[in-house]
Image (tube, rainbow, N blue to C red):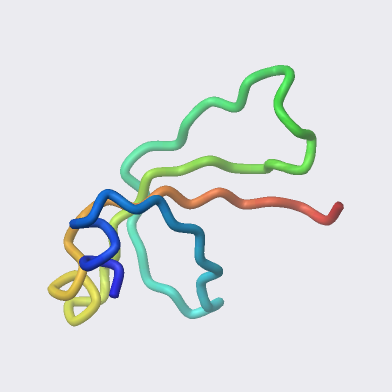
Amino acid sequence: MLNVWDSKGVFFVIRHKANLKYEVITERELPEKASQHVLKDEEITLSNPTSKHKYPNKLRRVLCGTM
């Protein structure tokens, strides 16, 4: 499904499961005036071979604290 959305230029947000296997490509710096609830902003790739085959592109992972 992610490939279909990506091929159509759709921007999407999903929650991932706690057992998601991924590799961090880069960690983006957070702007000083950014929301204090944003803890990390990373570009990742999926590392599970089956998942990586289904969606080989980069994803953006944003980790937020409680609001």
